[in-house]
Image (cartoon, rainbow, N blue to C red; front, top):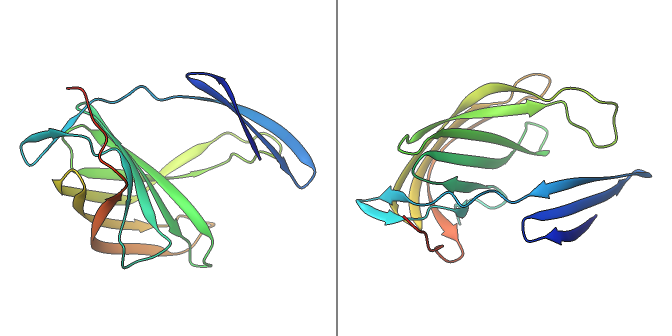
Length: 162
């Protein structure tokens, strides 16, 4: 894999998988702004994890208009997978979606998504929260994740502009 800077807002991601080479241009997401945590303006953006539960976690981008979450978990076979979800900026319940279709070394297939569960996010501080995740993998995958746990942000709190 290679990552090349095109300009301040774009990267080129290149790959060579099983002898098949390709690339994708990646664009920076606009800064989402701030959200409210315990009555204070704050940024929830970052990587979140449960220090007692290794190998799994979340990425959050949250602003006043939208919250987006990627959950990194495993299917029944132990293969690493991910789900994405989004909700309005003040919604604490986020519908999680399972995606299928894209393969960088396969013939084109449209990307599809389907609801697979939800995440409830209860942030008490900009760097500490309670997450309740309940998802079930849709066929052909198998497995279920059901956790209610305290999570912390990995790294520093980002500054935000209201």
